[in-house]
Length: 113
Length: 116
Image (tube, rainbow over all chains, first blue to last red; front, side, top):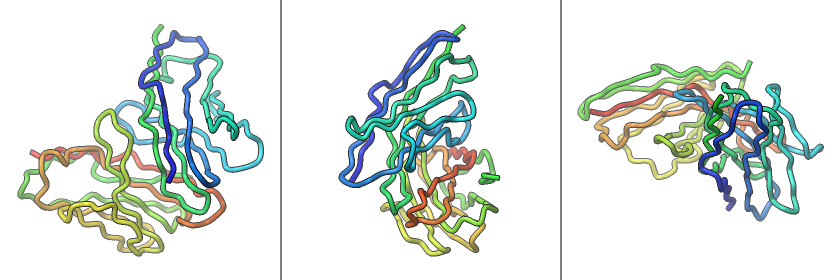
């Protein structure tokens, strides 16, 4: 069985500041890793994913995440956030060969002017 | 196109009512899912359909009854719900459930259910 830990329940930042949302996972087998974003009163949108290959993955809106196998981490970063990035961010993991997701508890990113 | 469409967006029902939530995808995905999400919590898996057959039921009460009429449609029939069942119900789909291609799950916008 796998688990996902998002230590920060809320991260407040000012607009144009950098941000890092932390995600650590635990699994006895190889995994796929995902970040989903949920804007207020909306469903989940896939932000980015790590399946294999390059450990650095990027999204179209400036976020990136790096898979670190030795530290079992998949932290999400953005060099300069916008007000519109305010949302709940969920890290999730699935075992290779299976597609059921295990979610972390989520991190609320609050961007203020 | 990675779209999963859910209807209705909002539903208010009494505890004696019977209602249904509907979900549709046209991505050719063969796996479909129902998740339940309470406020400020991550989504919780309820059901998984693979190739139109129920493959996972996460011990969901029988007042929730899933149905997969075909590979593009997924319904969730609701009967005799309790106020604590009020939540956001998310439908999702993926290519299949056991491939090694890195099955990515795509979610719909959800149906907000309030039980009164």
